[in-house]
Image 1: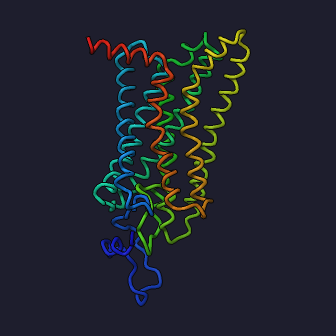
Image 2: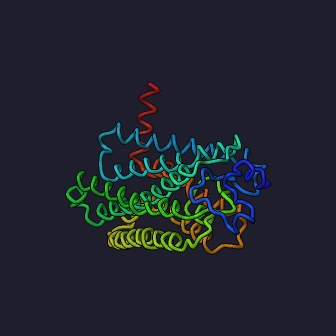
Image 3: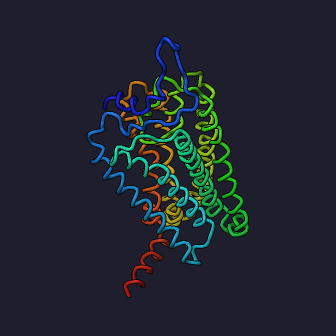
Length: 332
């Protein structure tokens, strides 16, 4: 796809002639242009089919989790409260991305308002951080359930769960707040074209014609010191969990107890591995093709909302039983 037509459509954002200035900035551009998946424009319609299907399954699956937990009093416990938090986070995250992405693929609607771009950036990164925090809370839940089963109900009371949820929300909101604030301060020049189907921090910052090391360093701080610490806390929880499991007297007891953690482990792997790979590739993978960058980033933000309800629906017997009972009851 040629960039000139897009530039002409937003000519008021382009630099003035060289006689006016060597570099003319527009520190408050009115719009950005989202290219979708550069290099694969002719396949946008076909690419939209799996993406639309993924979004529909994610919405249906996460709403089903919320409905079943709300409907069944026996599921009103810390593990399922955290699962509901994860479902809400996944719904907001996928809805922050997919509608605009599909409008690009279907209607070639590539323009996005500058403030809308920063808002989308904030929601995407904020809810990714919240999801990371919820995974830590779920690891804590499994640790208490396996290592301190007799004290589970006294440690993870409803007020404690509510405080953990509030802490996760506040941490995500405050940690990501500098992203749009800093991005709005930089001058932007020569282009307003983002080679992505949505606004992410590093892609927007790369368009600035200024020293943006503050944004880059802060992004690395969030990656390593926030998500990195989350991963350390999860690893420490599971080291203690494995020690407790291995101390059980029989093989059957070990397998049964470990089975309660399998769903959470799958969700952790689906979230952290593509995320770390995507973040590091953006910063250090200059020789990687652009469309591969974009596809990996899409996997990072779209796969967890799709997989989480499926994994928990398949691996959690209580949810399976309630869902089956609901269908049988409605069938009668």
